[in-house]
Image 1 (cartoon, rainbow over the protein chains, first blue to last red):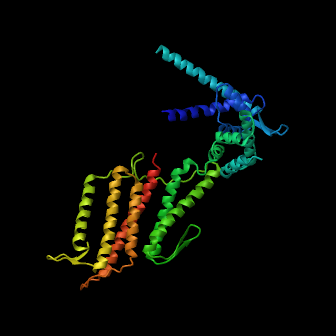
Image 2: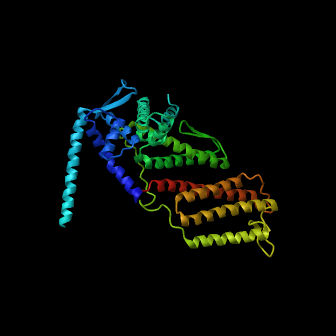
Image 3: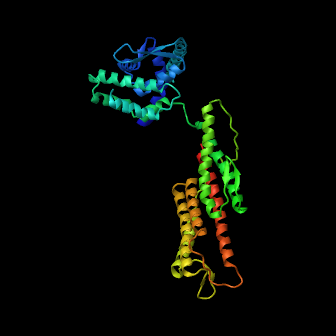
Length: 112
Length: 309
C-alpha cells in the first residue's frame, strides 16, 4: 500500500515541482538555497531530483543559469526567462482550474 | 581537493551519458555537497562530506536521473525488437539448413556468413546466429531511437495467438501421466536388458540392436532426452511459459547433438538384408530435424509471449 502510494505521490509531485521551481525562480537562486526554501514551507525535495529538473528546464529555455565564482565556492544561480514566465502563467492557470474542479466535485459529493 | 568527493564524482561520471555539460553537472554536485557539509555539519570535514554524499544517493541513481527520456531503445520499439529478431533468425535458419543440405557456404556480408558445416555444428552455430541477429536488430533500433524523428518501421503482423492470451496451451495431466508411463516402461526395459533398442523381440529372448557398450550409451542419452521433455512438461504446470519449452527443446537438441557426434560408434549387431547404419543415422537425423523445428517454434513463441500486453 505504502509503495503504491509512494509511486502515486511521485507522479503527483513531478509536475508540481516544475511549477514550484518556476515560481521560486522569480528571483535568482541556486540549488541548495532552493531546497532549503522548499523545506521551510514543508516540502522536501531530494537534491538528486532537483538538479536534473533544473537542467531540463534550462534545456527547454524556461530558466537560465550563470556561475558565480566571486564567493568562496562557485555556485550556479538560476533565474526564470521570459519564455519560462509564460509557461508558468499557463501552468498556474491549469493548476487553478484543476483546484476549482476538485472543489466543485467535492461539493457535488457532499450534496449527493 | 576532497578525495571522497572526487571519487564519488568519478563514479557518477562513469555512468553519466550526456551529450554536453557533464563537467558542469559534476561541478554543481561538488558545490552542493560542500555547501551542505558546511551548512549542516559546521564545516567540510571528511565525515560531514561523507554524510552529504550518502544523502545525495548512489552514483548510478544520480546519473540515471539525468538520462530521463534518453532511452537506448524506445519502449515503443520493444515489439519490433523481438519480431524482427524472429524474422531474421528464421531467414538465418533456412539459409543454414540449405548450407548444410548442399554442403556449401552462403555469404551475404554483412548480414550472413554461413560456412559449410555438418548438422552437428549447425546447432551451436544457430545458437550463435540467434545472439547475432538480436544484436543486429538492437543496433538498428538503437539508431532509430536516437534519430527521434518518428521513423515508422514496417510491421509484419502475423498473429500467432489471440492478443491477451497465453501462447501456450495449458498442459494436461493425462499427457504427463502417459509420458511418465512411457518413461517408466522404458526405464524398466533398460534396467532389465541394459538397452531400449532391439533388433528383434521375437520369442523370450529379445535381440539388442547395438553391441553392449553402445546399447547402454545411446539408451541413457535417449532416456535423458525423454526425461528432459517430461520435466519441461511438468514445469509448465507451475509456469506455463514459452521460456520453459525453449529451455526444454534446447537441452533435447544438445543431447541429440551429442548422439550425432558420439565418440562411441554405434556397433550394430550383424543383420542380413538391412543397412542398419543408414537406418539408425536416418532415425537420429529425423529426430534432430523435428526437434530443430520444435526449437524454432519455441523461439517464435518466446518472442510472441514477450510482445503480449
